[in-house]
Every structure is written in C-alpha cells, then in structure tokens.
Length: 352
Ligand SMILES: Nc1ncnc2c1ncn2[C@@H]1O[C@H](COP(=O)(O)OP(=O)(O)OP(=O)(O)O)[C@@H](O)[C@H]1O
Image 1: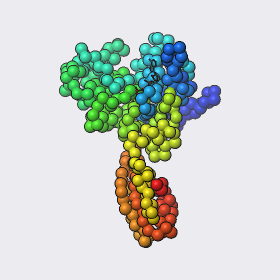
Image 2: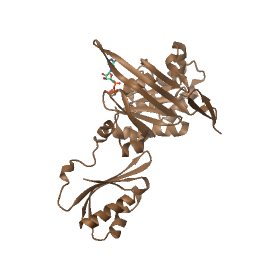
Image 3: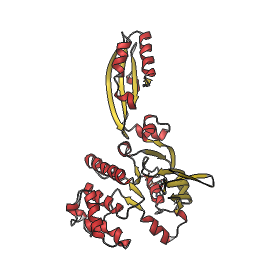
Image 4: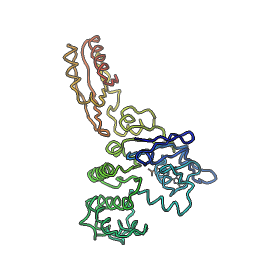
C-alpha cells in the first residue's frame, strides 16, 4: 500500500519505501556572462520525473538542452532554484556529498567520452574502481553481457564502431547501479540503424531495471520511439510538457509545432484548392487508427467519393497515430454528412 505523508505544501508519496518522484527541478535559472550582459540559458524550469519513466527533453539548437542536463548533475551550478534527487536538494551539497550523489547519476554522451588508453573492460571498470568496489570482474562482465559486448572486453575504443562505443558508455554509466540515467544526445553521432539498436537497448534497460531516464535530443524520432513523457524547451523555457502521444498529436506551443514541421504531413496547403472538391487532413488516434472507419463511412453515406492522396500510421510510445490526406467529392450535402460521420467517430478533421 502506498503511504502518503504531508510535508509542507507537498504531498510526498512513497512506494515500498522508494520515492515515486526521483527527480524534481523547481524554479531553475541559469545565466552565462556575455560581454557586459548575461545570457539567460535557463528560465524558471520546473520538471518532475517519476520512477521508471523515460523523460525526453527536445529543443532546437541553442534552446538550452545541454545547459539543463548539465545542471541536473551540477556539472553547471544553477543561479537559483533546486534540483532534488529522491527529495534531497543537491544544489546545497558540498563537494564530498556531490561526489557520492554523482555515483547515483549515470551519464552517457553524444561523443561517448571513453578513455582511449583503456580497454573496453577497463573503461567499464573505472567507476567501480573510483567507488572502491571490490570483486569487480563479475560486475563488469555482467554489464558487458547486458550491452552485448562480452567478446570486445580486451578491445580498445579505436577498434569499435560508434554504436559499440555507445554500448560501452551505457555499460559504464550503469556500473554503480544509478538511480537515474542522464543521456546527452546519445544517438546524434550514429546512423539510423545503429540509432534504433541503441534506443532498443535503452528501452530494454529501462524495462528490466525500471531505471529512470532523462534524455535530451533534437530528434523527434528519439522521443517518439523511446520516451513516455516529453518537455519542449525553447529560449531556455519549458514551453510544453506531457505524455509524448498527447503533445505530438495535439501540439499547443509554437516551438512544438515548429519541431513537428521538420516532418510535415501536409505540405503547401494552397495546392489543395479546387471547386466542389474538399481536401481533408484526417487524424486517427489510438483505437480509431486501426478501424475501417473510412470504408464504413462510404457505405453509410452513399454518393460521396474519396481519393486517398497520402497516408501514414505511426507508433508513438506504443500508441497508434494514423494520418490521411484525402480528396472528397460529391454533392455538398452528402459531403457534410460524411464529415459529420467522421467527427462522430472521433476522427480529427481539418478541411484544407
Ligand atoms: N559556457 C557558456 N558561456 C556562454 N554562453 C553559453 C555557454 N554555454 C551555453 N551558452 C549559451 O546558452 C544558450 C543555451 O545553450 P545550450 O548549449 O544549452 O543549448 P542546446 O539546446 O544544448 O544547443 P545545441 O543543441 O546546439 O547543443 C545558448 O544561447 C548558448 O550560446
């Protein structure tokens, strides 16, 4: 049974003795000097990440992603605000406490950050050595097995592909059983096939160990494939956040819409204008995406004709999202009946 305890204004929830909110950021601000002035890289950031969640932070270049992830483990100290891990504000921590808490925060990087003079085995072993752990061999070999690199234990980073290097980075980040894994653009340097395999590995690790994961990226595909929740950062502010499916199928902020425009479904709306014909952009979410709604509608409203110009179905965080661009012909009244039918069946309709 979850036990609830009131503390100050916050309701803090424990589940089997563990904190449900692993990471909480409150009113975080960060500026950098810029000549005589200062650049505000982060503006009043608030974020809550629950245990076992994969939380993506997406934004365009210069939005503040790197600054944010670096303040989460205090590689960059914030100007104001708090970063709480398991309810402890680590901004107040002294050097020794920080060293200890950083062991509980694993991190992987865009450029892998492996030590080139050490073998794969030694790279993964390093955090265990620093933490003065004994009997390291079994742990290192288990980690290498987890990431599929047992055979490469004695290789050096220069002898590995990009994907293999990132696997070593992941094994190293997991060495001390972290509470949270921070991923800084982990697939930016990889090709699409290798990206997919690294995202699958991160998903598998998340499911196996319920490992809370925060990932920053500029790549929408990473968020759609991997994350449960997403926050959109723009000009140092979190302008939109929520479940990935909701945010991407019903974007509210200009920044989210701009990110989605990178992959437009309907290009150049002005192309779709013609007398007596309606061009429709239809969106089907969840269950509706897999139902034969269109063919049923055509049987129901006899006399309208429909031409499919373009279609797609996507898997966003394990939910289906279908889109169709169609041309609707027929008598005005019948077209209206067909549109009504679509709306009754929860299809989102945009008449272009
Ligand atoms: N060390 C620094 N000194 C001064 N300004 C900085 C510093 N680091 C970042 N900035 C500025 O802070 C803002 C946010 O930068 P940040 O690197 O966090 O963005 P980003 O979203 O990670 O961008 P990218 O995807 O290009 O890496 C930018 O305006 C950047 O110029």
